Length: 235
Image (cartoon, rainbow, N blue to C red; front, side, top):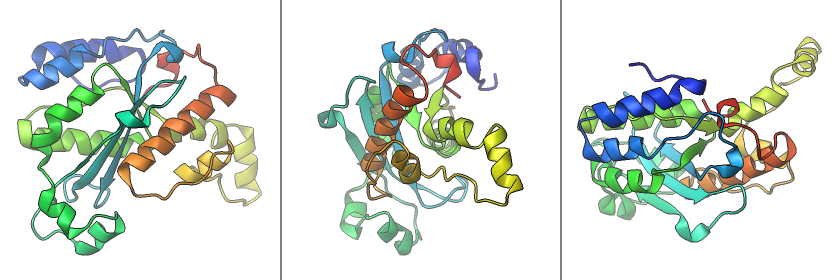
């Protein structure tokens, strides 16, 4: 059964809650029983950011995972979680430094399979919010398949996608293209700046998760509204 989009997600989640061979995954999928028409304001959320060594999950690795549960009403920083993952042998030291990870951190890091139960516990019952969902979805699914032989796919709200709907679609964006102007940037800090949010230092998983959570709160307040149904937001 292929992972869907829009209003078909509930059927997928129910299927995986029954079919998964992993107890942790069955419990996780069973916790995601949202109605597509449910308002975003009534939905527990969790911002997720992965720092990776590249863009291809078949050749690159997850270095760290930042997770921050929140709602539209507020963010509790005390609830944040971050895991450092052990990179494969022969991994580039330059990439480690780029993501502010030291060799001492690597020595203490765990394999993805070891942190997966705690990660799923933190994600359970909450709708994932990310900035550029193809990366998080592909890497999480690939890592889970490699360790457990199981798929890990779920609906997500993508703050980059929401910005693209506003600034990369419609006549305004077409006029910009015709005039040869640079397309509106969808980068995380550039998107935040349009709502008056300050820039954060990038490439730190838990800090990027916080930046994403704040961005979604601003997007709902200024471009959508708290009663917006999930099926209009998730991918």
